Amino acid sequence: LAKTTQPISMDSYEGQEVNITCSHNNIATNDYITWYQQFPSQGPRFIIQGYKTKVTNEVASLFIPADRKSSTLSLPRVSLSDTAVYYCLVGAPYNFNKFYFGSGTKLNVKP
Amino acid sequence: DADVTQTPRNRITKTGKRIMLECSQTKGHDRMYWYRQDPGLGLRLIYYSFDVKDINKGEISDGYSVSRQAQAKFSLSLESAIPNQTALYFCATSPGQGSANTGELFFGEGSRLTVL
Image (cartoon, rainbow over all chains, first blue to last red; front, side, top):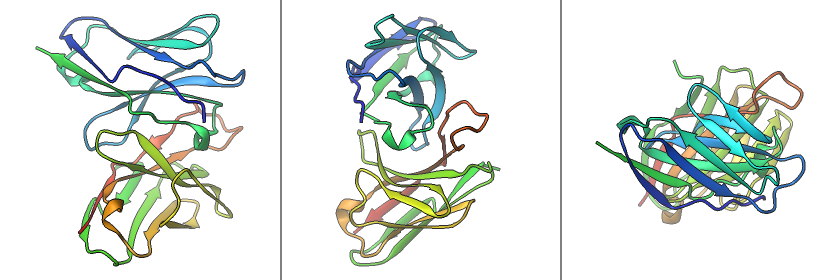
């Protein structure tokens, strides 16, 4: 399993941009980087997925440098409802049996 | 209605009892998964199934068994529950490789199991 390293927790204030960085030094050529969001007592929810450079959707942006050994999830103008745990996963698409969910990053957004 | 439905949502049982957690999905996905989450920790894979006849052990399968009754149904059983199996259990689905999809996992709302 390709393991990742993320900060255990982060604090932010409403309206700020939040960047969560994930380290994945052993990423393989076929691996993609996927981020999930989990609220308490709910199942994780897909946020964004990318292979290289930059990916943007209506929720977030994902920045991946050329060496792909790390990635950064960027959440623009967070609100209280963005308080959640964010997981960075690395693996080949569809091979979810080989995806490793670490402890994630607990984001706490304050008023 | 949820696309991935788990029953029961909450269950309290005693050590040694047999417990079954059920998962059904309306997404038409071939692949289904059972995960376990302990407080403050990430999810760990228990079992997964790529189709009705293909069932595989995950990272922590000891003490668990599964049954894929149909494409839409995947059940997790604890033959003789023990207290350290107290956890939040999630079922998930994903399309098969080659399908037109985003490579996402779709999770149910979870089943909270307490073993006394």
